[in-house]
Image 1 (cartoon, rainbow, N blue to C red):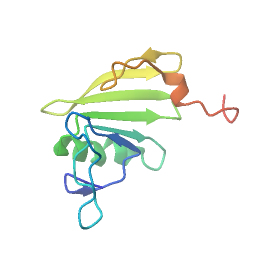
Image 2: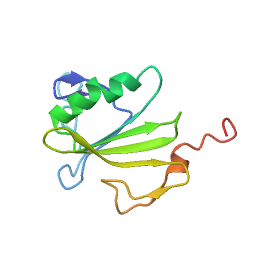
Image 3: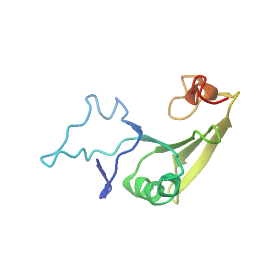
Length: 122
């Protein structure tokens, strides 16, 4: 995927149906260039710096409206909303919390379910 001139592979992404009734198609190079309204990156020790640094800046420049950071180590969800100068943190939630996170305010999310690893961790 090419977002704002930056080649990347977001972990999760989505477009608003009002703006994109159909999923964007790849261009002749095989790259989707339509900027998604929402991106979620799952942090890992090897990618956290990139996700919170260069990718965050690149997504902001490209116009991504909402940027989520899901941290499976600390089991937190951070929701950022695009404003003109930079992203604004609008929510930080952890295990045990039920949230209505932008842009999915109509749906209540149990943060613990985002990080349900079965019996592998407690």
